[in-house]
Length: 186
Image (cartoon, rainbow, N blue to C red; front, side, top):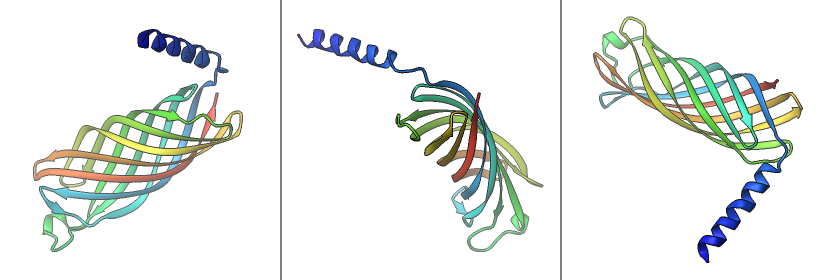
């Protein structure tokens, strides 16, 4: 009896989803915002640094799901919380991310909130020290506001965390990115 009920509910759900109008599209977008990063090098903490971030995205959306390729870049200052060793004075961290994320939209007519998870490559370049890349996960939440059929404004908060192996030790980066931008649908 329970199995039959489960099959009936599954079929009814499938029919309901397939009867929805196809809201599919390819989009390109730009983003800019605020990046707050907390770095640690083998347990030694750096001061939290905030800076501007910029990036781009391209994606495909179908119904309440979107797959998106994201790229972002930010340059952070690395200053120790206490005494700064000479080799780390006035160092910058050129931080980049290129990844794929899945977005799950709550279907609403104009305002579309979403949750997102992603995976991708992270690059950290410290001039005069080293360049390292590693893969990692990120998660976020956002809001897309459709102003016209082909244009949408976006706002997003995304947390990135990755550990990179430098010659000097393991550099752990925790990054909160708050960004806004727009998407153009084709």
